[in-house]
Image 1 (tube, rainbow, N blue to C red):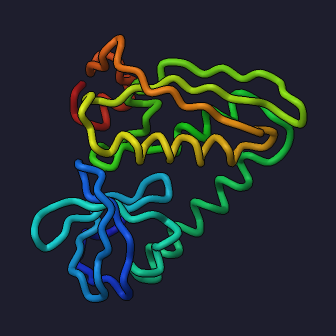
Image 2: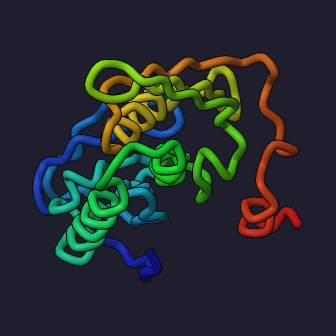
Length: 187
């Protein structure tokens, strides 16, 4: 989403995740923020102290009507995209909606997804995702794993998902797509 980076204040108490440590915090009503990115239905914002937080799309009403509408638009698009029968490409599409809160690129574009497998089970499919992080000690890792799980479970026909976090081989920038490198000014 393209939007002006203008300061705003929270309209109500809102849960958030501090970046990069992954600690959960509650931002009180009136907390000054400047949204830095709105991707994948999530919002990364800088606080008045200079730290970054991530706010879930379900709490976008605390950021004002424009961002609430953006979160609703994303949710509606995702719902429409995953309707119908199961197809592995829909799982990949769901993974493309999971963004690193510090980097404006999806985990697929960043090369963090090392593997995807789906197997039929009674009533649908079980999906196994093997992924890594840009840094092994990244505190936001559990948050990304939850994002992946939630995104994949939203795909029609998925009954269960297993997300395996691995660090071998270690991630490096060569795993990024050309599109991500171009977007991040690395090409």
